[in-house]
Image 1 (cartoon, chains in turn blue, orange):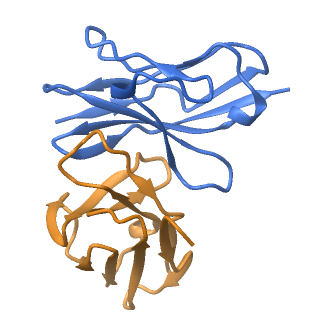
Image 2 (cartoon, each protein chain N blue to C red):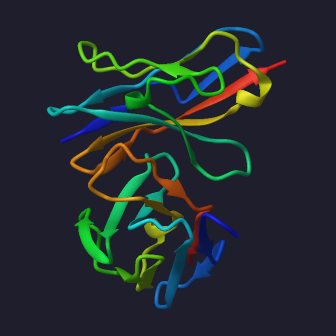
Image 3 (cartoon, one colour):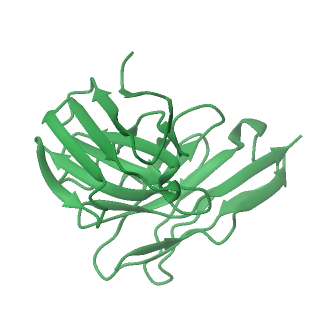
Length: 107
Length: 115
């Protein structure tokens, strides 16, 4: 069965510092991975997907099949990045979510 | 309102009540989903409907009964719930179920409390 693990429930960094939110997955097939974000008082929304290989709001994520990871990175965190971040794996057309990491960016 | 709309936003019910959650999407999507988000647990997929047909039931107890009358509306009928069913119930939609690279669009959720 597929599984997504986000080992950090809370990540606190200062503004301007680099940030990396970790995501590891287990899945025997070819994975399709996503990062979703939920800002305060807003609904859960897609941030980026690995197939697009794009940078959204300065965030990037690279799929590393050898390490079964899809870590989310941003070189300089901003206060408006504070939110809950969820890594998700699409396996057999079903999304499996990680437990989420709350990112707090302090001024 | 565009996007995915869920009503009610909050619901308090007793264990013997019957209630329904409603989800509506105006995105022209063909797939709709129910998720459960409990405290201290990851978001859990409950049901998937594609073109009004149920394609997934993720071992959900029968006290939860979904209904999809058309591609734009999805209901979750609740009956004889347990206290552990208290959670945030999220609805989502995507263009098609069988294209896993398409993003899901979420509603705000219904916060359900079982007394």
